[in-house]
Image 1 (cartoon, rainbow, N blue to C red):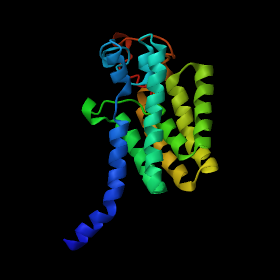
Image 2 (image 1 turned 135 degrees about the vertical axis):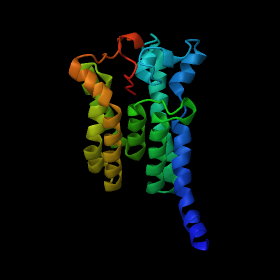
Image 3 (image 1 turned 30 degrees about the vertical axis):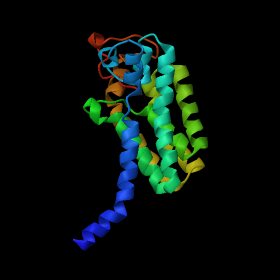
Image 4 (image 1 turned 120 degrees about the horizontal axis):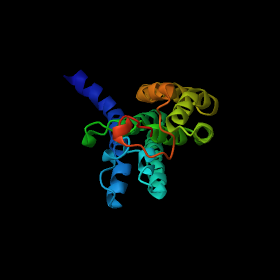
Length: 216
């Protein structure tokens, strides 16, 4: 029993860092902003997603931009606060924020794909690497107009970029992030293959196949 209590006392700060990051990441800014704006439940529109891409389908570019900014800020904020207690805490807090955005407990674990929050986490870990990943996202989005493809490209670039401009530990963490983003985008990849993936700015309802198009 003494050994167990000693082990828990050693590990609780790490669990607390992950938990605090999760709570921050699970704040559904897209849902809250659209409700405050009188637009109803964003989950009943377009893809049913709470992220910025679906918020854009309301026609409110300002709300979409604010959702994107706040979803990214969740990841960056968690990392920056965690970094006060060291690099391990920063990574754990960032991981918690990403998981919280993807699987928010108060929305029955139905969140977004995590791209904006992952970019925020990258910015918090290494602002140089984060900016490169954002540049990748912007470039691919500008050329293809596919938010999902841009997010995947940025995520896949993450490990190499973070190894280059960050640390080895951060690069290893970004490998896990990239794998998670790929898994979350499997439905998008299938639609891309069929030519059915909606482009950025296109309004798409649940009835015409957009229910799983959760890009951000």
